[in-house]
Image (cartoon, rainbow, N blue to C red; front, side, top):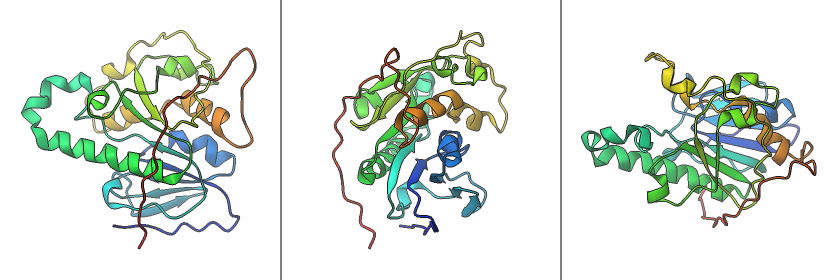
Length: 238
């Protein structure tokens, strides 16, 4: 198992994002002064520091997060072998691909629950509802396009499995004028990264609902209550 030491001279709280290539979800947290870690096998270098964001190239199944004061944890494990949109290919892929995909999900879940921080794990509509449990929440990007992100005016049903203390932000929808935009992307090298990127509107909404200093809960836009109670496993750093 590998881990990394992240310098933190100003003793900032940390935000961790697993299976995250784009860093969209941590962008507002970094801007607010949190120290962010994004872990993904596709990062070009073992460790890259971009201001308050540290990119780590690692397999989350073989990586231990550094001991830190975590304020939030995100996870977006690959959906290719569990999403119902690809169900017609499941038999030809074999059980090995499914086992690998579920192992990634379980590694993310373990780290999320170990952190002691609020967390969310996102995936499209998938077989995780069968192999794990039903999602706590669902959303489409257009439902958060009103957070100054008009380019999020599209549909892509996304499931969220969360901790009990996660605060689901209120919707600020825009008309879904772009429809199912992701299904129309051309088959090029960037397609997977684009499809898996967290919508910026949702990223900003989650920050505003869950950060220490920027809670956004007006009376006419109540937060959506979370209800899942997580158990806390132990991760050994020896």
